[in-house]
Image 1 (spheres, one colour):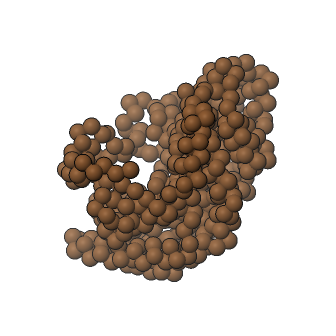
Image 2 (cartoon, rainbow, N blue to C red):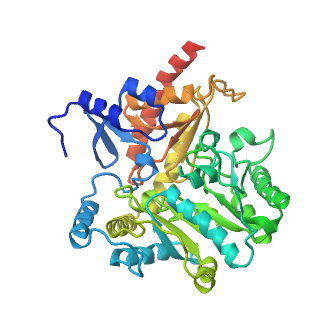
Image 3 (tube, rainbow, N blue to C red):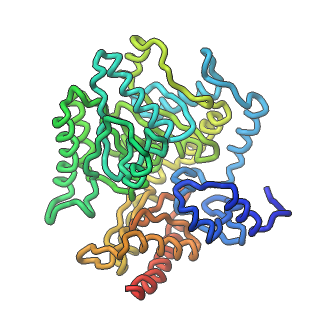
Length: 460
């Protein structure tokens, strides 16, 4: 769709006058003006100045099948004509909702057979929090309501989601978090591993922080442990292989539920349909969203274990929870078509066997030696580049965060959308990326690093 009578400057003025952006310094934004993204195709986005930008973030971790999929647009059109909306209240359902729930259950770990729909990952995590606490209350243990999370985790922007997450800046603006949520150290070896400590031992030590929190509170008071398999917005923090199996062992030993937040990792990102499979664990809940529709429409799904579902059905009565758009038929129809595309084109297998390993290798071989880079890491099609002033000591540029912002701006100027989280550069591209697309991205990353290095070291 084009807007021939509205020039860029007018759009920026309209945006500044009426649109409050998420996670934005609005004074800064209104001084600079918004970048207007006007169309997209395949792995590329295009702004109003005609610049072609390789999208290294799949929108916001979500556009797994790439842009311009007419099949998804056609599915939405047909469903809108047939049944644009009906709710899931009043003992009602719609065909796309039921079929998508069946499809997700068929792809998920075998013990997760129930699905609760919402529209966002934040909603999905809100639902998980309520459901897990409700489960223990139904089991006659209402005092078992504490949730253990990790510092630097991201679990959404609602009050409950921000409380579950471990972002200090978000906590500072809550004016009071949801109670009985505690945060422990994340499995972030780059900054937290001790000298000479192996990845294996660090993973066990990071997991022990969770057990210590359980013991401190008393296992009879802890409902669940929530975590992203790979911490996404916190900087693509990939845990050692020893971490999640040990966390699962701890949870089972203390009868604590394991809650996976796969809003980012679900539906192929790590080379399996779910990262639970990648890390070899069986969580009690999995929250998903984003790639469920590849971002074409808003939809989330909470996957619930048979254990929790049996208690909810047999002992629960009415579960006083839900949303107007739970199981929206158009969103669910698009979600079903999207999963069929991922399956038909073998995108999960491609990430696991080809592009994922190649992506990690190219980051390591081509980027890690750069003077600004302290470490690269990747899993599937998700990667991070740690930016440092001194490679030997891992000293950061000051103030922290300015290097990441500088590199992000150079990256976009060189035709690659790459995100900065503090001084960690992160990538999460569409699963349709090929080796050729990865090579193009690597070339643009190196140009951005070179340009930024001259600017950053010139300041110091």
